[in-house]
Figure 1 (cartoon, rainbow, N blue to C red):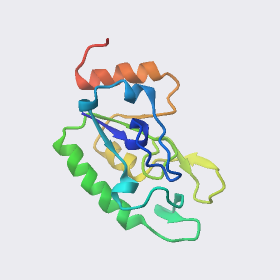
Figure 2: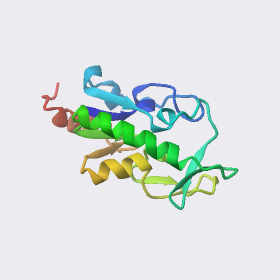
Figure 3: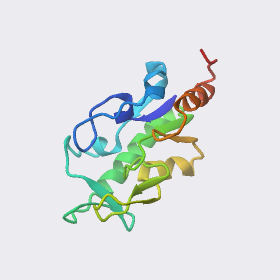
Figure 4: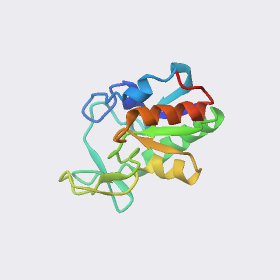
Length: 154
């Protein structure tokens, strides 16, 4: 099973109400993916006000703090991922939940910094291989994911 940011699987759950479909994910067998969005699992609506990480806290531009709700949702998702025997994850880069290599800096200015989202951090601590949608070679990502599923390339 591959855990996938739900927006990359084509579900319109991003803060602006859109999806961000990613071809390597859409090419995988549907039964092999576990699409999840920590932010919608936490009860944040779609669309919703953008949130960024600052000092490890998930906040809105006006300072409302939603860290605990997100962390609870992530714990629930990780339990489901464990039961599903997730072997890898494909996550939405830049997201405060899912960013693998970079996230916004918390100033709501569009500035990116090296860092990971809350779900990516937890998965990394489990030694789950992480991929992101901004990978330079989507076909290589697809081949790697097939390997995690124990499938042969097509």
